[in-house]
Amino acid sequence: MNTSLINQANLRNGKIAYSARNVTLESTALLLHGDDVIPNSGDIVLARVTKIGQQNELELANGRRSVLFVDDEIIACYGDCHAPDQYDAQVPTDLESCDLVAAGGIASLINHRHVHAKPSTTLQPIGLLADSHQRRINLKDSALPKVVSLFSRPYTVAVVGTSMHADKTTVAANMIRGLTNAGYTVGAAKITGTASGSDTWLMIDAGAQIALDMIDAGFPSTYLASPEQVEGIVETLMTHLCVARVDAIVIDVGDSLFQRETAALLDSKIFTKTVDGIILAATDAMSAVSGVETLVSKKLPIIALGGHLIDSPLAAMETVSAIGLPLLDRAALGSSGIVNTLQIPLQENIHHIQAAG
Image (cartoon, rainbow, N blue to C red):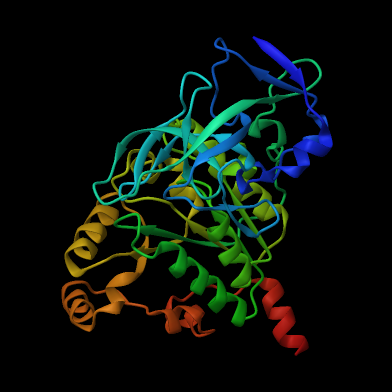
């Protein structure tokens, strides 16, 4: 393994990706490089952009999207990625050329590419960030600590989807808006999938007082994570939301019902005891029916439907006739009346606010 000193000023001149937003760069003193350096998921890498492809912008740690140019130096994070309409990618076993597989700053090596997906933006790793003792800088270093909440869990709604792009995050954001309009203080979390700044910022923009994702638990994504690791992410994020004393929690469950890590989570006791209700985002009537059957078979509390199927009046009518559940469009989700539609219990401090009003 070779090491070289890194200048802090030069380091900060690079574009720091969303995936590295929690990393304390002040502790970085060295770059690790050489043929014997094998990256791990969560390792932070300094890399040079060598070719612009699918990801032509980078979500920065400060919330801005930066256009990428060849020869840009970026600080990103190694991680696995599962995106059925784009790439299947895994952390490489060397520091050779790799791919930028997500705008949030995930460096990986593509195994499979969707036939309609563009070739990726390519990176040439310069080295792994390390401290003065040659210890690698990893997302787990800046993960939220394990804490015990002395507060009861507030009402929690999970949004799951029949596919990756069923409009889950939009459903979650509008749900946050509706609860906020009803006077609730809302916490939000994306608990599975690949970390994305756009998802977190959308939940904040919708009114969430605090929004967390798997990066806050030390993971760039949940793809290829063990069931125990995914459960640990859920417990960590939920505990910190409870400690924040929010009145309600909305969680976004990434990917589809049948994606490996998501399917395992839905079967877990941790998930069952975490959620009070589930909204299923679906793309059409058939997927909605199948999704509801899947959730019912797992004895999970599905309470409503939403997603892209509402964009088609015919699909919406087919779904309503086939399933006896509320079908909520964006306006219904974002209205304060959502608490009555879904019979969401009123929190004690909300009573106080309304009484004072």
